[in-house]
Length: 73
Image (cartoon, rainbow, N blue to C red; front, side, top):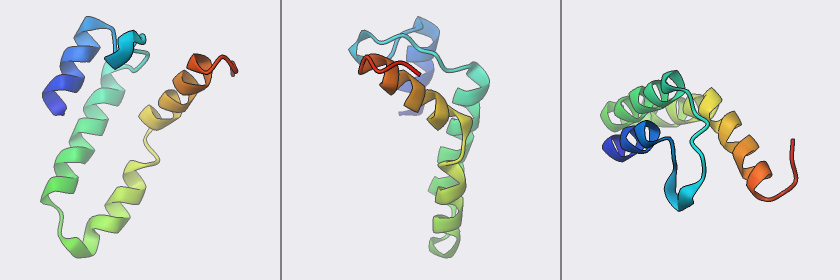
């Protein structure tokens, strides 16, 4: 997943041909959290997962989804 996300970012397109509106900082931050999630203990996983959901990449993804659906911002 990590390699694919970076590849899509460099190609400036996401699966389905949608434009990639994520900054490289958002992509790197997300990948860092994915690596942390892989290495974390079961006890700490839920807190880290909830923190991951607050990353700005998810806000951007929601905006993209609204635009794709034709609802605008």
